[in-house]
Image (cartoon, rainbow, N blue to C red; front, side, top):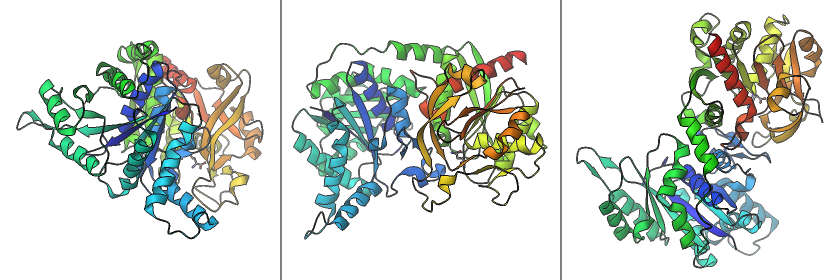
Length: 536
Ligand code: GLN
């Protein structure tokens, strides 16, 4: 029977429930259990695809094309197992399902209510992955903070499910904050006590408390928290601030979080977790022998979460190259033809980021022109690739008004244009070209040497594409399409012949980079940047 672990948060948001969940899952996986993590988000959007990155950080896309919360990225990066739509459910989706059923007549004669109909639908969704038979343990992360009005039906669903699942088949981990009051020189447990009291009011007794803290918890503090929150003393787990999120599984191991979980769920310990490859990665991450400086040109640079997967992919690729990657964010709106040299000074490579709409687009194009002409390693992703095509069109092919119809619907030289299948779509939510598609790489190209194979599949999130009417013209001038979708001839990868490293992709390789499997496009780009820095 599948066992269920629920992770709730208290006191404040942003305590890192996603990292704690992923770290615990890693430890259980390293002991030989099949584990998955799912996230329930209490907002009313059907998915985060329609949210601005400023609101919610990056939108993470799964193999099956679901637009999901960025925590799913952590789950995949830690576990190296793909997630799917079933791993991320929002209140919007729950209500949509219930309302659709109501219209179908599934509840004929009944008043449809939060309890039982919404909570039943939440419970049904919480058990879908567990019932697939693919997992021994399902970890469910509840978004938001206990006490939020919108989280209430989820906490109630957990209360009911625990009762239905029976003893030893589920447990609740509550993540709280133990703040340090500098003036008093003390760690304070009261917020944790209040947060647990609130959970108790809703009928949920947490089994394990994970306490975020800036200072070590003394034995006295642990005892106090245990006594006032009804948990065992060894179930008060310290989660001290770490220098990298990749340290957290080892910190949780030290606190024996996985051991306590297995004991409470009456599961065999299966011996010490095998964390050799994880430790090897950490060793390389923490002992770099070189350093490169990469510019990340985008328009959401104020918020680090907006480019989460890109930043993490650089960490994986840096460790692989035993090289510290310093990512310098550069606002594309601040770049002009006049200041580009100074803006990109000292960089060993530049990545032009994905994005939507016309804001900041000319800065990206100016940056690419400079990079192309000055032989600086370049990596373009999605809109970044489209910008490289526009730049080449304007400045090499002499198509002065070359543009994407996303920014200029009337351009005569629509080198990037809307995909045919997109033209009839009116709704904005979940209607882009999403998820994994096959790509065939041309032999003898840089892309082929990067991947070491010619058949790949990568994840997508876009509406516009390279306009194949221009392909001949581009290839004759030296920009070649080295990756093509075999079914519809969509250009997936472009590269420059006469440039040390100029590779741009229509898909999102950052979504598939994990600790165990750093993405070859990032690994090779960092290596190219390293070579460039040696040349300098
Ligand atoms: N806005 C572009 C498109 O829709 C690029 C999307 C992206 O960068 N994810 O095609």
